[in-house]
Image (cartoon, rainbow, N blue to C red; front, side, top):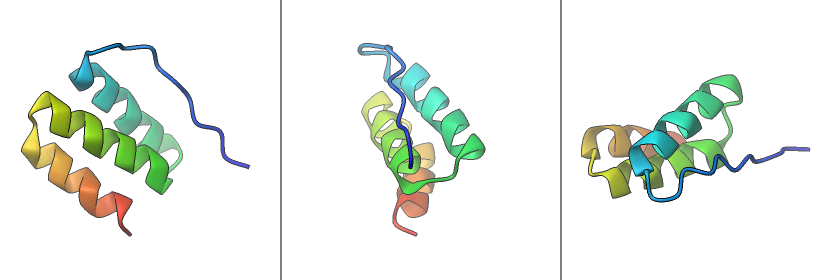
Length: 58
């Protein structure tokens, strides 16, 4: 069973993205990649967003 964690970063998308990226490196599941993708996208970091979008769709 997979557990998703909530990091409590309310509006700080860059911090959220970094935490989801770390979660993905520890447990490489598509949900973490997708969350990192969305957070990086909202933070305006298109390079990282594209990287995690590709990982989320594997």
